[in-house]
Amino acid sequence: MIYAGILLLVVMAIAGAPLFSILMGAAMLGFYSAEIELSIIAVELYRIVDTPLLVALPLFTFSGYLLSEANTSTRLVNLMQGLFGSLPSGLAVVGFVACAIFTALTGASGVTIVALGALLLPALRESGFSEKYSLGLVTTSGSLGLLLVPSVPLILYGVVAQQLDVGEPFTIADLFIAGIAPLCLMLGLLTAWTLWRHRGGVIPKTPFAWSRVWQAVKDARWELPLPFIVLGGVFGGVFAISEAAAVTASYVILAEVFLYREISLRRLPGIMVESMVMVGGILLILGIALAFTNFLVDAEIPQQLFEFMQEYIESPLGFLLFLNILLLALGAILDIFSAIVILVPLLLPVAAGYGIHPVHLGIVFLANMQIGYFTPPVGMNLFIASSRFKKPLLELYAAAWPFMVVLLVALLIITYVPALSLWHIE
Image 1 (tube, rainbow, N blue to C red):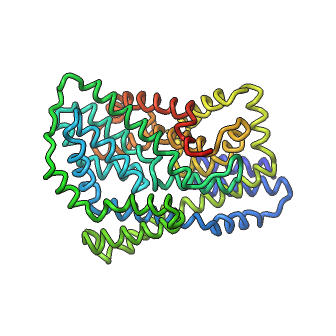
Image 2: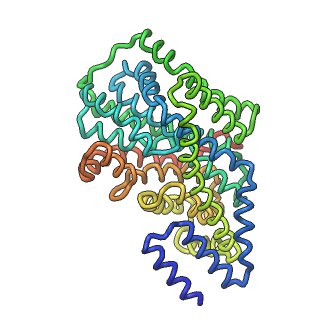
Image 3: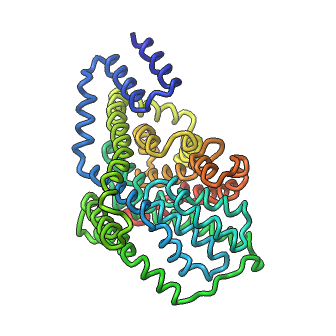
C-alpha cells in the first residue's frame, strides 16, 4: 500500500500535479505508515492560520501589487537619477538601487523586470552602456531587494522559522536589520565592478541639478514617507509587524487611490483578488508543508540527516559551502516561496546542529535564492527578461554571468562573515 502510494506520487509529480497536492500526499503517507491520525494535517493548517504574524503576508503583498500598478517605478527611477545620476556610471547605480527598492516593495522579481526594465534598458543604452551590460543589469538586479524590508520572502522565512522554534530565538525585526548590511555589500560590489569596467570616463556623467532632485522629490512626495513609516514604526516600538503591514496597506491605498489618483476605486477589488490568489497559493503550500514537517520531526528525519552529514562534513564552514551549492542549484528550479516552505524546515535543524544562527541562515538562504533567479539554464528572471526584451536565452546567459560572479563573491562574504548579518544580535 505504501509503495503504491509512493509510486502514485512520483507519477503525479512527473505529470505536473500542484506542489501542495504532492506534499499533502507525502504527509498522508508518512502519517499513515506511522499509524498517526490524519486529522493532524487539519490541525497544522489551523495552526498556521492562527499565527498573528501571518497577517503581514497578504497585506504587504497587496501593497506591493498596488505600487506595481501605479507609476511608482517611474517616480522611483527619476528620484534615483536625480540623486545618483551625476556620479561616474551614475545611471547604473540608479538601476541597482531602484531595482532593489522596488523589488522589496513589490515582493516579486518578475514585476521589477517588467516595470523598471522598460525604463532602464533604453536609458542605459542612450547613456552609452553596451547592450550586453544593460541587459545583464536589468536581468540580475530584478531580485536584489529580497533582503530589504518589507520583502515578502524575508517575512515568510521568519514565519516558517519561528514555527519550528529551533536554535536561537529571534524576531522578524532582527531579520529586517540583518538584511541591510549584506544588501549594501552587494550594491557596493556591483557598483565597484561597474566603475572598474567603465573606467576612463567612457560613460558621460549627468550634471547634478537641485531643480531635478526637487522635482523628483515633489513627484514622489506621497510615497517617500512609506519606508520611514514602516521602519520607524517597527523599530520605534510603535506597532508590531502585522500592524505595520496594515498601516502600509492603508497608506498605499490613500496615496495611490486618493492622492495620486492613478488607481480607481473600481480597480481595487480586481487588484485585491489578483494579489490574494498568490497569497492563497503560498498559504496552502505553507500549511501542507508544515504538516509534512511535523511528520519529518516525528520520524526524526532532521536528526538523521544531521548525523549523516556529520560523517562527511565536520565543520560549520563545510556545511555552509555545501548549503550554498545546494541552494544555488535548487534556486534555479524552485520558486522562492516553495523553496522556503519545503527546504527551511529540513535545513534549519541541521544548521542549528552546526551552531549556525537562524537569522544568519535566513540571510544566506535568501541571498542564494536571489542569485538562483538568474542561474542558467532555468532561472526565472532569464525567461521573464527574454520574453520582455525579445532576446534569446543564450544572449541573456552571456549578459548575466559577470553580474553573477560579482554576487557570488558577495555571497561568500555574507556566508563566511556572520557578523555582517548578526552584528545587532548579542
